[in-house]
Amino acid sequence: MGEQEKPSGPDLGRGVPASSVKQGGNVTGQVDGEAVLLVRQGDEWFAIGATCSHYGGPLGEGLIVGDTVRCPWHHACFSLRTGETLRPPALHDLACYEVEERDGVVRVTGKVARQPVRPPARRDRLPASVLVIGGGAAGDSAAATLRREGYAGPITIVDPDPDAPYDRPNCSKDYLAGEAPEDWLPLRPGDWDRDHGIERLRGRRVAQLRPRERRVELDDGSSREHGVLLLATGATPVRLGPEIDRGGKPVFYLRSLRDSRAIIAAATEGARVVVLGASFIGLEVAASLRARKLEVHVVAPDARPLERVMGPELGDFIRGLHEEHGVVFHLQRRPREIAGGSVVLDDGARLGADLVVAGIGVRPNVELAEAAGLTLDRGVAVNERLETSAPGVFAAGDIARWPDVLTGERIRVEHWVVAQRQGQTAARNMLGFGERFDAVPFFWSQHYDVRIAYVGHATSWDVVDLDGDPARRDCSAWFRRGDRTLAVATIYRDRESLETEAAMERGRRELIGELATQP
Image (cartoon, rainbow, N blue to C red; front, side, top):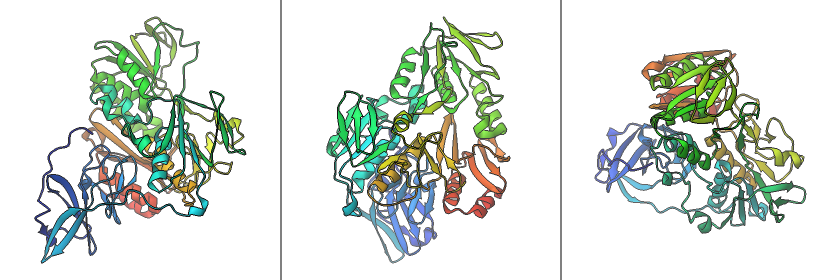
């Protein structure tokens, strides 16, 4: 996001020798002052915009898979044939160019006009209307996908968050750190809903589902009928009990843009902050508030931060990284009480606190599903197409527990990109595509100048094989159970992360093993 660097590289309008681009290779250059990626695949040449439309990642450093390219930073995927964004987190298409090869020279000519939407498949089975409950990552992605796929029927989104949709991951990262303006956060232009014929009921809640009647009741007593329904209600932060939070300084939780604004308003330079929980949210908050020159203490019951997700070696590295930036840890400790201007720990230690932020986990918002009699399984149980036990009712995002292809287990994942990709699949299945959700889970976490990328899903493992050195910002950690690689975390090994994701998608466990042994 923000201003892009001036494009460099050869003038592809004038052309480059075909022999200078190897098979399966690419070159990044420019055409009329715009960065362009030129790719050679077999006998075909492709040219699209060279900069990812998400955060500006360099696609020339990404991975070519068939006629697609994947961003090295956050794994967005684009079509080389059309420039269309195929997978989030990128939401906007790239420019696409004509390419000609003549007399051993390859030239990129004018831009190609694209069809903005495709004709819908299986018109005889299109729903009369779509109702989406939740306008965050999954709900927004579903609505956009429905329109992109050519669905012209009514779409209504009901969301209690008045600001949705916005870049939720940034609420704990650059925006909270004061390094990104708020106008970076909206996912869509202000007139997007109107232009796409979407009704969005902001600040409203659904009070009850009536799946058999294909109707919902709203919090104002009115009701809405629907053809199909998507539950994308997300999750809510776990809150401290009254025996701990005894009043005085307010305890902040971070889930929404409104929450992030409240923390920023309370954060004044030099203030003392106590962060409860060494979760990803808790540590990203700690890093962001250190960037604002606040004194930060982190209290957590674990022996190492993030050890349950990242293993001991990366846990030690993450602790050291935060300590280098001035964060003070109080590990294997819990808060006994919060009162006045202090947090008292279970060993009697007292930490002065002008600001307390709790990041101790979230709970999926399954109340509507439970009251409606939908099958639950530590979340809302869905099949491989993300449909719940009620026909015509789908679930996506933080609440959905689905059958994972790689592990053979039912899993629920609280990651932004997973929610976006599930929204895509659910939308297509509402239109009768019958697609299996088989995307490999992916997320990233930013800590100062270190970005950790994680593909797969491992709730437990037998061994963590570490290759490289975290201290040198160059390593990968392979989480294995038996002969299976369940997940891989990398630090500045973007190519390895992409290759592992692609191998997991293909189910090539032997290839995944080969990748793990490469230097």
